[in-house]
Length: 489
Image (cartoon, rainbow, N blue to C red):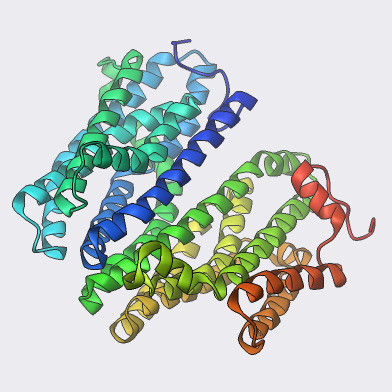
């Protein structure tokens, strides 16, 4: 075995790796917080809106050009390592690296042209630097996806988790103004650093043996990756295209800012909930292999129930205080972010149904349905956005996200056979009681801060009263023990 590898399958965490993963995720959210607190106010609403459009185009372009490489690395590298076929790992890595370099070279012209079309007031130097960020980040991603396949979790996570912290740190270190050109220049420096570090870690796997030229083998990897790639790309387009659509349909960069900041917060929460669905995957796989269908449904339904509960608590806690809170933290000009945030939070309710449905699909090898669900969500969003954004700006885009997620969740309900999961999670009761609590937020003539405390307590108490949530379920949720069924209660 070559140095720097871990003798476990990709994604299988030892206690030490789990601690490292948690530390990197903590760093990621610290970076997001620092980014949102410093960059938008430092740039101003109009300038940050344009920067947000660049970020959306960048992330969409990175994912589009990845061709499902991470899924392929996770699938084939553990197999090759277990059979001692390290030459095949080197060949696979080199094939993807050369492919990414070729794609980055060709797509750099497309990226440059699209960015120039969307943001025509950018200078040639800024456009060139931004294109350099795209090319460097795309090539560097190959090194870190290799680390994921080798189960080097810390090295894999460090790129995404430390991007924002390094960006903020270097901007402050050099005392730079928070303008578009400076930020993109520092981003290029950060991505170059990742490229150098990634290449150093991947040094043992560089090889130019004849296997590198076997196109049929590369196509096998790409075909496998595409099964995951299409659904993920459509979901990324669903979340990320709002910034671009707002700029095109409303022509107000500040509206992009209001949506982008709120969307970043909601995406962070969605990422946390997605991690929960990933963490239960080994248990779901084991239960499926053992034929314990009822226990598998219990895992999924309990997870859905408490994620839904958490989402409602967040909505209730922020509903009355979000606007003054954001105005005090970011400034008065960012006050509309609150409305976007409160609307977008509702999208987490259907999106968690979609995410858990996709987890169930992975257990049953039904990933082909993911693209249909994500595709319907995206199409619904695009249609609604085309009608709503010209009239309502960023609020229209936020509403379109909720409508798109809702449409996708309905299809997920049928395609992933989630009837028993939804029923066991008491989802309809959770939504009904949550709706009543929302009405109380409007009707009760009480101070906002008091309501943000009272309504969550009232919601949880009502759920306990009707035995929708129970102490034994809560204990299981935090102790990973088997929950008691309704017959045991």
